[in-house]
Image (cartoon, rainbow, N blue to C red):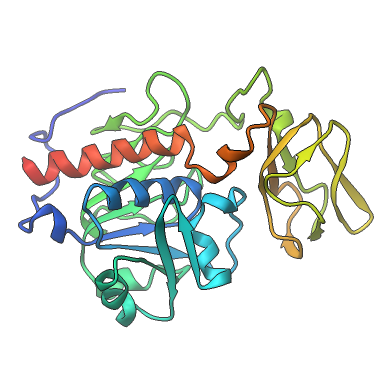
Length: 283
């Protein structure tokens, strides 16, 4: 992986406004995107808007601003996001110190609004349509983007030595398909849909569960935990899913307060985004 400087061929234009005036659009409002939004907001970059689907599938819902789509507002670590109906309501949310979340799965707002910074935080492991011309600085999180071609900067999202690193030319590490290891567990931590259908559960985030215990059902299919721990993430009961969809996340450490805190991974990635913005603006 080659690392280059801001003065290399694939540089991005310098914004002319102050940091506090930067307009920032984040595609996605899941846990990683929310970690980015919260860290930027705390650093004074508060003119943020987040774009989501009309029915988000965020698993770590307790720390996801995507919940505003369902409940009109969501507070994560003291910062509030609110759902808005159209881009005309963005400024009013900013004026009250809140982060607006817009259901805009086709990112139509980017067609008529020029943002200083656009962050693709969908974490789809592939590029679903990010273009380097979408903003003055375009940042892609994780694999699927090429810095200098699709986007100006890529942030590494794979756990390990390079997590959160800013990539100025080239790509992030390929998707491994394996979640981070916690107490020796990786794939066992995840709950996945065994079939298409409606996921129904009577449990919630923060509940303690034992190995083998039923978590919910999809039709006649029972979803069972593969280890004991605390449910750190879980889709809403009644969500329509496809086979293989991630339904939940079990943390064997059983630390219930952590369910409501932004993860170390999200904070590291957010730090990379902040670095990319700062080096670009101050160059």
